Image 1 (cartoon, rainbow, N blue to C red):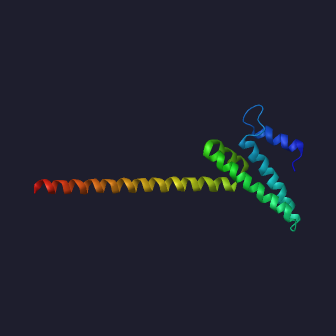
Image 2 (cartoon, rainbow, N blue to C red; image 1 turned 90 degrees about the vertical axis):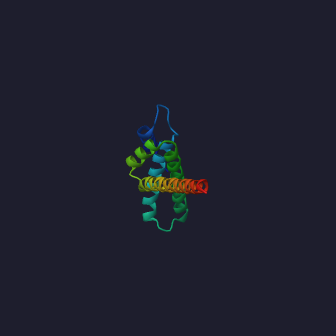
Image 3 (tube, one colour; image 1 turned 180 degrees about the vertical axis):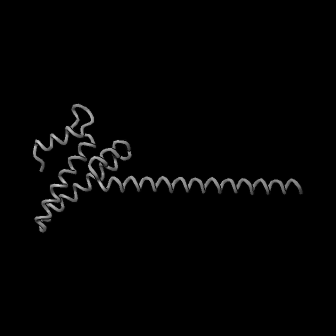
Length: 131
C-alpha cells in the first residue's frame, strides 16, 4: 500500500489537468509504484502467495489500462511508457506496428489480386468480342 505522500507526489507528477486523480496515466503510474513495492516484498518473502496473487492482479490491471490508453491516445501512451520505462509498453508498440504492417501487406495483396482479376476479365471480354 502506498503512503499518502508518495501517492500524492505521483498524482501531481502524472496528472493531466488540475483536479485529475483518476485518469489512465495516473492509475498506470500508481499501479507501477505498487508493483515495484510488491516485487521488492516478494524478493524477500518468497512464500507469500497472497501477495504474489495481488501482484499479478495489479500487473494485469496495468496492462489493461495501457491497452486502453494505447487505443484512445497513442501519444500519451508512448509518453507514459517512456517516463515509467515500461517494457510492456515497448512490446505493445512493437506488436501494434507489426499488426499494421501485416494489414498493409494483406491490403496490397488483395489489391494486386483484384487487378489481376480485372485484367483476366478484360482479356476474356476481348476474346469473346473477336469471335
